[in-house]
Structures are given as structure tokens and as C-alpha cells.
Image (cartoon, rainbow, N blue to C red; front, side):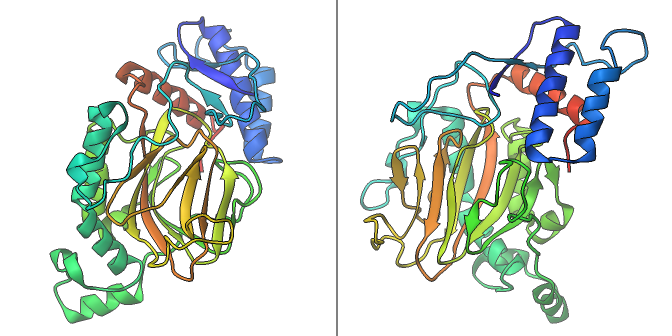
Length: 347
């Protein structure tokens, strides 16, 4: 079931369509869950708009409707989100090109010379050293480099911090959640999240205040993707690990990678002739460079591999697609708020 986001339909139609969509979403993501049963009851027993006082779909929010059939199997990579899409958005697998030889980032190419995407890239890259230092301190217990910016006041505090690192906070082995399928990865893949399914982690902010401040700035600028499908986390993919080919749930967001640690042998070739540590988005294979942001559209099929014996670490953050207008962001947010308030989605 692929559906489109839109507004401007009557309340009863909007409510019924949205209820059907979230019923479908929950059945895919959380089979046999109580939330799924709640939606069934709501759909069968609550006539939207029937009587005053009953919960009604907000008139100023987006809704979802069943879309047309889609052509697949053409042999060409196209965006193919697993849940729904907003028509008319510009679409490319990668929105950033690697810096030219010599590493002159001022000459980097951003798709369409888009000022919104350029600003996000520049913000993250300008804070690379501090973000990496916070990762090393908070996750690895290594206090060095720029960590003196945020160093504790006493040696006792320092020891305590090292003995209580941030713990992985997302079970990547479980079925369900965003991708609603079997575990995506082989090997070891850890998440240390600031934003997990749209919810902020105060402990992360305490341990990584500079990183949190950068992300909070994106939120204040209405750039940070806001929904239960919003994520920002340190992604640590250990050596001899993979993330299998999959697509994101929607085309409303762009996903940004800020590489913090890249294996020394990443550019060596693996048995398939590809770099040993890289990502494929659609038909394009990309190698990460420390401190150089990668912007991708994860509604294209993508996969990741690390065939080295060292970890690859990056900060991942979801931002709104630049073509989603402010009014659309507001109405889509209200649609998800309504669904969360009904107990249909959420952690």
C-alpha cells in the first residue's frame, strides 16, 4: 500500500483515510500489538464527525489517500518509499558530491546549489571536531582533542564519566519500527541517539552539549525533520558488518551523514571490487571522508558495508526535504501528532 500525503479533502474522508493508513502502518510494524487492535476498534466504533465531543481528525492537518499503481521492475533506480510519498519533490540519490582532489570544500557541489542544504552541510562540517570529540568522550571514554572544551571540572568527575558511557539505545535486531522487516544488519551496529522516533534524549544532551546544540539549532530553524520517523544518532558500524538494501518509509526527509571515524583501509577494494567501507544509494557508491557531510535521499534503495576490521562512525540526522513547504511541514506534523495522540504510533 503506497499512499500520498495531501490536504484539502473533507474531514470525514480525511479521518477515514488516515485511520486506514495508520492501521496498515501498525500492522506492518507491530503485528499482534495492542495499538493495532485499538485502531481496529476506533475504525469500527467511532464514526468521525458523528457527534460533538468525539475525537476528530484536525481539519488543518495533512491526510493520506491511496495512490495510483506504480510501475516497478524497470531496472532503473527510482525513489520507492515503503509507506508514502509527497508528489512533486525534486529527487536525487545523493545531494552532495565529493570534494575535489586536495580537499577544497569551498568547491564542493551541492545539488541544485540549494542554499538550504548548503547551510545544513556547512553547519555540521564546521562543528565536526567538537562533535567527534564528544562522541569519543561520551561513547568511547576517550578524553582528548577538542574535549577540553567540555572537560569535567575534576579528575573524579572525569573518572565517573568514563565509567558510565552512553549506552546503545535502539534494538536494531527487533522486527518492527521504521522498516517493519527482519533485522537489517549483520555483524554489530550500535545507535546512540539524541532523537529517536521523534523523541529527544536528555541524557545525550547532557553528555554531548555541543552536538545537541547544533541539532537544536536545526530544530529552531524548522529544518530538523519532525515526526515519529525522525532520527539523530551516532551510528557505529563495526568491522565485518553490513546493513542490507532497503528503502526509507517516505520522501519527506533527507538524511545527512557526518562521518566521524572512517577506517584507514576503507578505500581498499573488497572481493566485489567496491571500496571496503562505503554506502550505495540507488546506482551510486560513495566513500565517506571524515568531516565531509553526505546528504542522501533514503527513499532510494540503499545499503552499507564495512568489510574492514575497524569501526565506521558517523552522526546521522534527518532534515526536511527542502521542497516541503512550511505549511506542509506544519500540517504533516499535526497529522502525526493526531495519530500519536490516538495511540496508533509512538514508542
